[in-house]
Amino acid sequence: MLDNNIKNQLKSHFESLTQPVELLIALDDSKKSTELENLAHDLASLSDKLTVSNNPDIDARRPSMVVHSTEKDTHITFAGVPMGHEFTSLVLALLHTGGHASKAKTEDIEQIQSLDQPLNFEIYISLSCQTCPQVVQALNTMAATNSQIKATMIDGALFQDEVEQRNILAVPAVYLNGEPFSQGAVNLTDILNKVDAKGAVRQAAALNEKDEFDVLVVGGGPAGASAAIYSARKGLNTGIVADRFGGQVADTLAIENFISTKATQGPKLVAQLEEHVKEYDVDVMHNQRASGLQRANNGYEITLENGAMLKAKSLVLATGARWREMNVPGEQQYRGHGVAYCPHCDGPLFKGKPVAVIGGGNSGIEAAIDLANIVEHVTVLEFADTLRADEVLIRKAKSLSNITIIKNAQTTAVLGDGKKVTGLNYTDRVSGESQSLTLAGIFVQIGLIPNTEWLKGGELELSQFGEILVDAKGATSLPGVYGAGDATNTPFKQIIIAMGSGATASLGAFDYLIRHSEQTTEAA
Image 1 (cartoon, rainbow, N blue to C red):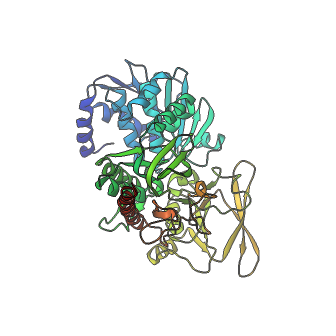
Image 2 (cartoon, rainbow, N blue to C red; image 1 turned 90 degrees about the horizontal axis):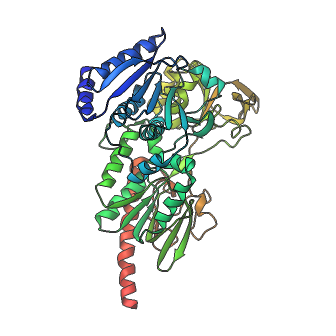
């Protein structure tokens, strides 16, 4: 099951195990059960702290494996074979169950230990989903820390009866004690704040106590990370406040246009960005959304959704963008129930079924190519009379027999049966005729919309599209406030351009602070 290279690496990692870990396996006569059994025995052969036993629970999902601490009586379950993106989740579960310390913040661990109610989490995932491991690992950390908490990863492609029964058409989908809890990206702090309301209050109080920053970067994507590094290198007191580090890049599978790197993946690049930021004295405040910007004395205040207030002499706004929606009837009703925005995450849930991709740019054609390997058929609908994707992608898509491309197609409605998507209507923009497609899923890939709603109605000048207006130095209409990345009116939305604009904005802020300091000194 595991090759010798991986075994050697794992054997080294497992040397840090200090407590016994029991692998309880529940099997049937399927091929996946054989794979899981082989995986369990391969793992157990690498450390005397690991043993394999049959799971006595007759109601256990099959195949499944429970990572059980005999000393702490903790339970972390993997229903399916946790390979692909979830293999790291399995390794971390073994290490944390076996006594290896988690990298979670001390305050988060203390909060987990203080929870005194039974919490049974079920996380439906796909093994190709890049967002899922973050959620699985957060919940596994909780389960390894507190015996009243249980976490079960469920491979949706393998347990399709459950997926259909619960009408799950987007991952990660989390259930708590049998009821829907969350869908999409969510991290440890988010989860703790949701199950422990007092935690959010404590967190807000701690943020309110922070000193004024020289430069506060709002947003943790490539632009925000670049801005923070450049500010910190100038010796400025720098902070990053972000909903999640990495932004859109964390959801990007293949990156092949990042100069100097032939090919990489979004999560890998995000991890590298975060490690680079950590090399400097930057205060990174995760899981926080900005809700307002106000002038204050000689600087600014950023209000957060949890009520906290952060103060700064200058700002770099790099809040990025998100997928644009179709804004047609049925889209919101069936969002997460057939309408999806991440083909890598949700594609496996539509195995063997017909789907559509809305949009003929690079993202849309790449999505169609990826989905063609999983689903029965992909129909690409492009509004314009030409495709905007790179020619190499268009040629690849046209070479695949189960991809149909329809141009001059305006989607007019998402159709469903009240529970899930059943199709869509579109208008042929040449003939004016209305057409219908029978579908199980619709993947929307029609561009980006800036995350700037929180700035509307304020003093900061925005474009008609909601973009932050910046000049060549990244300066906005407010003195000392700079913008960078996809949230601005920069004409091309690319990772490498966002990084450059983050550096520009940071250097602009540094120049402003020097001049502002000189003016303040002269006035005194």
